[in-house]
Image (cartoon, rainbow, N blue to C red):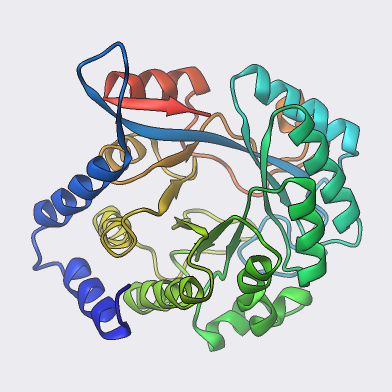
Length: 340
């Protein structure tokens, strides 16, 4: 476990433009290949394990007014809340494509109750699914219900660790409470959640280095209390956002790669996650360096997999529009063992 001083030094060195990118990439690639490679019984070659997952958006109703989000209330988007049966129909489409790792995503709404989520989770587990959640912060007892139902993990982005900017981007709604959101992953850990997923939105803050150090420090502190948990990290990057919002501090591709490599060096065994927000070429590049979990063939609208998009708008537009088969085939051709 690195000290705060070590974290700061490593992050500063890896993100500095004078540190050769090739060196940063090779260190991250070596660690990933060493830890995540495995031998297939019918092949003399080792394969780097890559897990594919899919998000299921179950509701785009939301009480929050996040300036950058397509779901923000009280916007005039077409909104939909899926019944448990409708969610299972979405899941059936994805399972027929091979997926077992399913991320349940919802806006913050009274309709999205812990009972509703727990029923979805339990039903997916019955069908051999491996569900996790990306939902509004919950008290410990709500997370405990989901864990009891079979939830495998939580993803929760702090969005920005800068308190002043956080208030600026989240002017109203329950999400405006910085501390309640910051403490959510710890509450999930206290409830027994097996995997803890951290992240923040790139493009909101002027200093990505400070953001990355803050996230790494939060995760490191949590691991001291819960050393048996699995960690995951995402770096979602804002490109174009709804409502005329433009990311004030865009992050370029090279810095984006350096940040993921930094996470691999500090957390060698963590899952590094990459979504379809990014273009296919960059996703391929990062899949060859340090990523171990990717979404594919994603929809960000409730009902998107069963062609109900005419009555429900997405949270954001995806950039990598390849099919699941296309992503899988590329990964296999480039030395990955694909799991779902």
